[in-house]
Amino acid sequence: MPCREFVVIGGGLVGPLISLILRRKGYQVTLYERYGDMRKIPSGGRSINLVLTSRGLRALKGLGESLMNDIVRMSVPVTGRIIHHEDGTQQFSRYGKDDSEFNLSISRYELNIYQLNEAEKAGVSVNFGHQLVGGDFFSNGAPSNSMLVFKIPNGITKRVHVRGAVIGADGGGSAVRNILRKSGCLHFTEDICPQGYKEIFFPKSKSSGSYAMNKDGLHIWPRRTHFLMALANLDGSFTGTIYVDKEPGLSDVSFADLSTPQKIMNFFRKHYATAIPLLGGEDAIVDQMLNNPVGLLGTVNTSNYNLGSKCVLLGDSAHAITPFFGQGTNASFEDCFTLSNMLDIHAPDKSEMGMARAFTAYSDERKPNSDAIATMALENFVEMRDLVADRKFLLMKAVENLLENTFESNFRSRYAMVCYGGSGNISYDAALKLGAVQWSIIEEISQGITDPEQVDLDKAYQLITTRLVPFQRKLNVDVTKICHGIPDSEAASSKL
Image 1: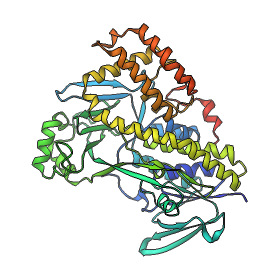
Image 2: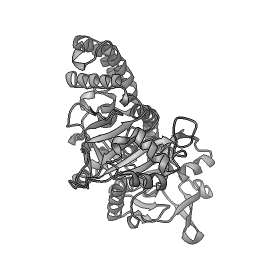
Image 3: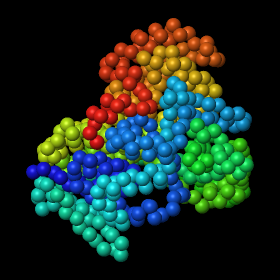
Image 4: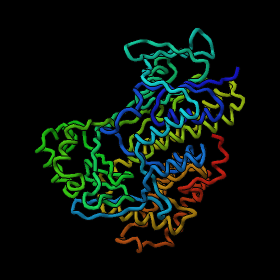
């Protein structure tokens, strides 16, 4: 019996995107979101600016140039990191080989609103105020039926019978994932980081009415056990985020310690003096640090992402990760891209058996890659908090950039593979494995030098061709496919 109906749980970034993709394929789609319509609620308080790279953009571009162009217009290009050292100096560290490779900084709030509008235009039925509190994927023993239980305003319980597939896109605390665990269909772990974060706003310059800092960089103030970062917004301001331990005892400071205006300002004067005027002064800092909530950071590791043809998990509901590689949204959007392709391959007739094959193939494909980016995100936390303050590390990053530009057809940084990969079989898992080999080469040729121009390029070439290239071939990876833009041929091959 054909499956023509999807029920999507979650109205964040993933739910509307996969709903839009499914509508393009001719499915009937109903979306349920636990909270009210965010379009009627002001933004603010706890929302890290998103970074979009070519992995995530593949899913968006597959929906058409118009949608893709809208997203680009809503974004600010970011070409690298700008490190603010404790001595007041700044240092630029490029992401890719040159300015043609950049990330897009975009407001989560504005992107989510845009996606909801597009989903509704496409005919998705969106229902707000529906909190999923229970469910049965084996309802009445019928193989094609599921039953979901929602709590709606005024405490009313609503039961929905689903004659199709359910998509869990309801975030790190996924109710769908919990129902599947209670049913014995999967297991998962939740590892909460000891660090938390607060949003902190950088206003535009009063004198110029525009950006008070270089808008083309991710600004980082690394301070070993904590750090501050900022990404540009379209209006001339920056959305900042400060990462500190939640509770005392693990390092020299915690959010719990920063409990009074005096303690807050002593902390900022000691560690972030150059940021104080950029943040609008001491009163603005104290107000935000006392009143903005502490956000949780963590990793969800799930054993598998589907239950036959009945249910599949996407995004954070399957694999929540920390935000330190800027890949949480991109990995989630790549889930949508992969699931779309698997549906085309395995279920063109929309059959239940084909749907089961598509969901299983999606799970098998995404699981190792989700695990890999979760690992790299945690590693990048240490890099952003600690290592980017280390001059030797920055030298090695400069050496890495030299190798990228000198041996572009064989050597691309792990960062470039993670952010601008996807094509050429450059998966997250491949980037993790190849990155380890590449860093060992960088360490070896960086010994005893103080400037990247001192690198022995003949030795570097020998190490790349004998140690790295054979491994690339083994993994069937083609690093020449790395690019910020998505090749037209690939976009056309996926009928989103």
